[in-house]
Structures are given as C-alpha cells and as structure tokens.
Length: 173
Image (cartoon, rainbow, N blue to C red; front, side, top):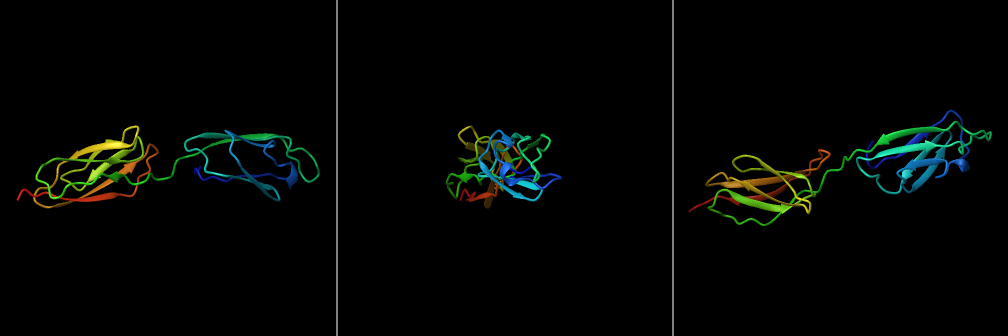
C-alpha cells in the first residue's frame, strides 16, 4: 500500500450512506479523512498521507447498514503502508576548484539516516547522514582533470533521490 492511500471496501449489498461514519468505519491508528459512497463501495480518503511503514487496521462495525436497514456483519482487515517517496537530493557544501590535494572531503546535508553515495571521483564512496542530516565523505579525485561528482541519498525504505552535482578540477599546476 502506498503512503498516499485510498481505502475502498466493496460489500454485496447497497449501503445506507448515512450509516458509514468514523464510528462504523474505524481506521487505527486514526487518520482524518472523508468518506464517499457509491452503491456497494465505501471509499475513505485520508486528509493527508498516512504514516509510512505503519500497520493499519480497518474495522467495519455492525453500525453499517444496507438500504433495507439490516446491519452488515462486522469485518476487520489490516494493511501496511510502504514509503515510496524519494528523499530530497543531498545539499552539497561549496567545493574549492581547482584543488591540488587528494583526497578531498565533500560535506553536506541530506535526510537524517540516509545512505549517501558519491560517484565521479576515482571510485564511488558511501557513508551515512547523521541524526541531523550532516555527512562528510572523503573521495579521491581523478588527477589532472575535471571530476563531476554526484551525490545521491537513499532512505531506509530504499528510495533514491535525484543527484546533486558538483564539479572539481584536480590540478597541481
């Protein structure tokens, strides 16, 4: 289930719209939202995205009635949301260019806890952003040339950001 989720429940009988409420259609943990109804289908649209990586339970109570006024059998089901949103690209601190030193340290910020991968030097390097999102990676540059460095953040759910780029010329002339 995606974080931006809509919960739809189909029943065999046409439902009495007035009986489908937050007391008869219970989502736990609770989330604000709106109900719509079309024949045998009840749709709950959360007002905001549900929390990622969270188990939810939907309880349909006997308070839901069909058009004849008969209570429907209670039913409970569960689902778990999955974080599918990519983190924002890392923000790289300005780098000096040209530089003669090798390796250099690339610093910046990203989503806290994200794995940061930096490519474009002699080889890829990786490290994690700390709890405040700060990171520092040491990368060896390709000597005597332009190095196009790209940093990407990968969150705990495995979603990868777009790259952040920086150009650094290694020159000792």
